Image (tube, rainbow, N blue to C red; front, top):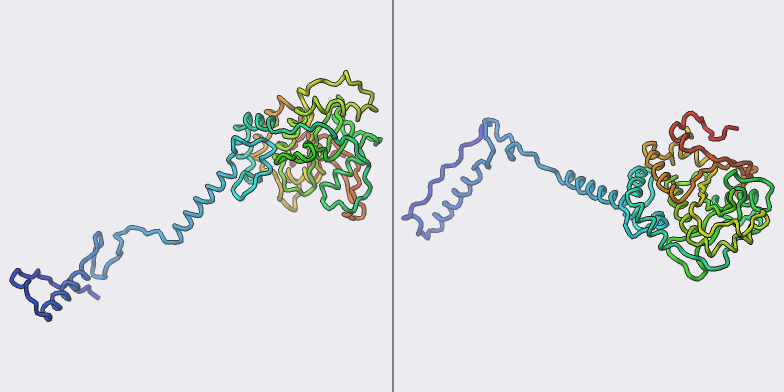
Length: 365
């Protein structure tokens, strides 16, 4: 249907303007409205088939599109906050940030977070040392062997106690070559009654081949914590041990005196501390993506190079090792402690570069 031609509108003459006749005024108003209704919008071309577009070819963004754009912008802002590192934080605080948008270790951000830590490393180390607690006494270096304690609810606690039972100073086996024995578990860094935020206990404290303390960070089999978080926590504990060593030294000497070391052989300060990150074999297979049935917990391959740069950066202060433990639960009774058979130091740098060559196990025997 053809579009009707616009109604002709003739402006009223001056002579007609002063009229007060109601009928005349209503007629003029109706004519003006009809003329406006048929006026084409700016940029709109009318054709025989009608107006093709009331927007002159311009595309309007729907309400849904605008909402999605806002949501995407908010998501990017939250992502940046998860990557952002407050210059006032220490290493021990990175893993204990609270809040939805605070820094938190996540596998999908592993590469970016490692790079951010490297950029902020000097500040992180400085703050960690300043905030590290200095326990004065009661260092809790002597523990008793633990039987199948049914009160232990968490898997990590059970691995911890089982490792201590097997490789304590009273045990007969050597843990690994770089750490002969495990002196204690849940070693408290803080003085009782004087807690400092974000400082917990060292999972295990070993005796190195040089008879010096070795902080050990432990993860369970299907842990959600990545190797990056393990590394950062190890380093935080290492700086704390370095700081407290002058006060810890005499008690440490008394605790390990059965090993034949003399006090004069121990250094006055710890220039380099040996650190160990340990976990069951299943954890490392998970991180390396060797569990074919699931990729959950796999550390992103693109994040490993940055991870090793961070390990090397810590090399000024620490000698860092990663260890795998093999153990099982007898009759799958998870209420008891696992039975541990062995442990081995991993060449994790080589394995992470070519994990598929190791099949589904990181133990060669």
